[in-house]
Length: 208
Image 1 (cartoon, rainbow, N blue to C red):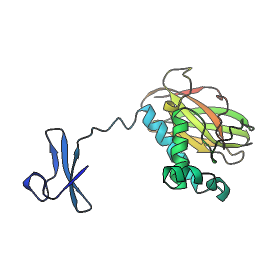
Image 2: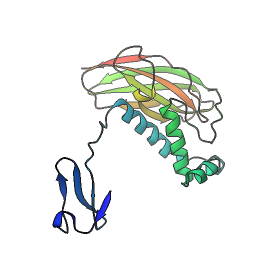
Image 3: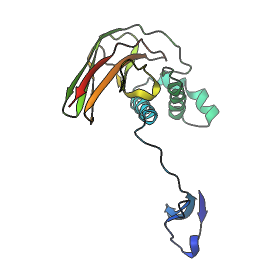
Image 4: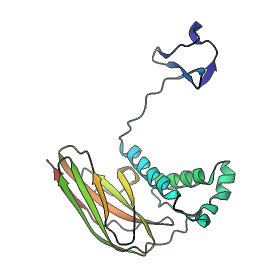
């Protein structure tokens, strides 16, 4: 971004020029920047990364002071806040399809809880995914994956949501809006220190 005092012989030029540059104003300052075409915000990768980030940001407030203190060294190295260090590190782990963690470094302790039955029930333009939790153990959240072809492996770019675990309460997610068609779902429990449980097992239903 380039700040200018009078772009294009005008004090307040705005809009694009030649499909290459944009004139605009931010906080009272005129500037020129390259015209960038946004990527598809609904691609599998975009949805997966946003879903992970949403979970991380929502869970930060509930972390203990001890959890948060473990991020201080990484934050100092980054010259950033502990919150930013926690999000950045975990997003990188997620992009490599590694589990996310409350503490730094991730202890990589195997999942000690017990998964229950997964169900998927269709209704108008939506499917309700319900994952039962038999025993919480060290589970932190349930990662919910959706794909269009049966037996597709779970991956970072077919994640649609991460829902926190609350003792043995059912984890429920309403996937909506959906176009007519068949949808396949799977889930994996995530520990609070960076490990996935096994795939629970595929469930499917059809939106008509």
